[in-house]
Image (cartoon, rainbow, N blue to C red; front, top):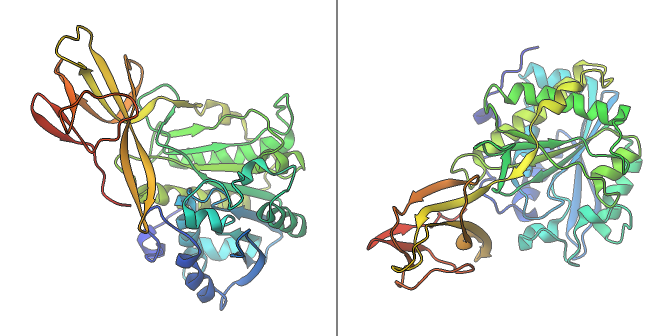
Length: 384
């Protein structure tokens, strides 16, 4: 069956931007109780509910969770778009999938981190480094549900920073994947091959839309990471990383791509006996490299007497302020940045670059504007 999707039909309009937490999703979850099984499976450190939705009645079991890191919300938006698709009685793809698959979804695993817009939970623990120790209530909730649900496939849904390129080219890693290692040797086991086959199916589809903008995340083994742990337990696990698309700091375009990738992956599992045979093209996907900054000002001088030209790299710091995520420009590096790319680039043409107060710039300064040859250049983004 051909994959034909019209996201506006399924987009959850109540969710947008980067700041997504339980308050935003509980109404939607309540509405889904009429059509899907909704279950509170535990609570966070601060007593926030952690919910799972279970849909479908097929024999192939797929388990996915989002916002293990509280500030990685793009995949949560895509998950609710996915739920809208499965709630559509007129969509043939959705009906077929629900006949062949049972899907369990935890929309927000780390509700305390989501509320505070932090990577870690309320105990300052990275849940994706707690898979072995299981020291946190959220980690125990995830493992207990995994043990009870007994999935055939796991989707570990994350977001990644704007710094990543797909390989060494001037191409942002808009979507990245990984079939995590299950041992120190990074052995290409049958379990990993099955995850790789699913990734190949998603990449083949995404290349039609974002050619050259799909990457593979680092596969160094760490048993403390959930994906590595679940892979080592024999469950094919796919890491999803929602990255940056041109000027899409609200991650609404990336949301569409993650939604499409999720449908492609589930559809592939639904229609095929995933044996891992078609895994080899996984190794043709470029590895992620850290070659991007949000802004680079090229050919800059630090003062009039400066005989050398420098490039000025600026990175946005995401800060939660009064319920909004503000992107604060911070000078990250001043150096020769040949081989690096900016999502936005200015050319100072050998002029002195100053702060908005006409002071010398330096690493660590947070500036909304810079002055180049008495002209003001804005570095600001709107709220997200």
